[in-house]
Image 1 (tube, rainbow, N blue to C red):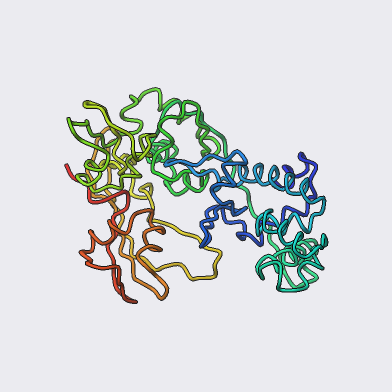
Image 2: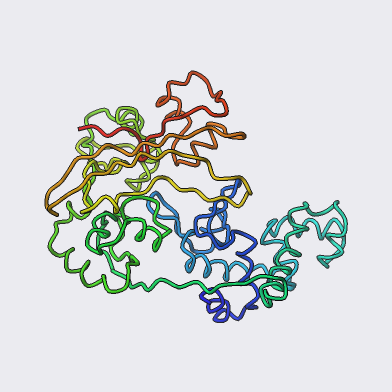
Length: 380
């Protein structure tokens, strides 16, 4: 219904609401091999062109409503280019440039004639439009095709406006809900904290908890809202030298501080270390950050992991208990490479090799790899 509301407001065909069924099965964090993400499977460049934000803290491709508004804008642009929905949908899959070149080479401006041969469009794009149309036909009358579609209960939510970054475990503690619930309501968040530079970030929380969270925020200092590991730059230090010293990615270190990876540093400058703080803030173990999760539309089964959550219990809210950085054991499956595993866990090949003392990039099926989420083992 949300998607159709957006399409209706933009004057677009409501049947386009079923495009995400083929793209991602409506999974907000679906990630393709080509790194397209979200229910609309936006590539990063196309997402940025259509108004979605992407940085170290957030990826708005994973927010269903924001991504839908961007998709409506993009689809309207494509239809304006081709004046034909079949060609517009083909270009949504294969890119407008590829479809335009195919039309020029073939001298055809009809999708069905263009796709009747293998010469002009790749198979994926030739199959894509029929898949969308089939999804529309079935979705209009699922019982005719033996499908019993059960309505999904939409979670009741409200929003809290945050003037600074806030640790999600704090929010979960105040809302009396698991951290996973907060993350599920805000799939665009990539980290354990809301964006540190945002002064009016809208965070979705369970209905009935916004006032409680707002009141509790007034009782806590900014440092306690988002306790962070920090590093004071010493004379001669660079992003590269600091990243090696602290065992974090230079790119992560730069992006977490809204810097270019090649940025020069000043002595005394304060840097945020892109690693979850060693203090567990939430009042029960159910609200600890979950193990890394991935979603794929490639048909490949999820990688089996043995997650070792860094959990501890706090009996009194002001008390703080140290915890270790979360460690994940990944069992190598057929088709895995160090590069694909690094991308899956948002780390680097170099860090994987260092953590597992690997001398080469060769790995074997069944091999167990140790992965430290958020950059590496925490130190005092």
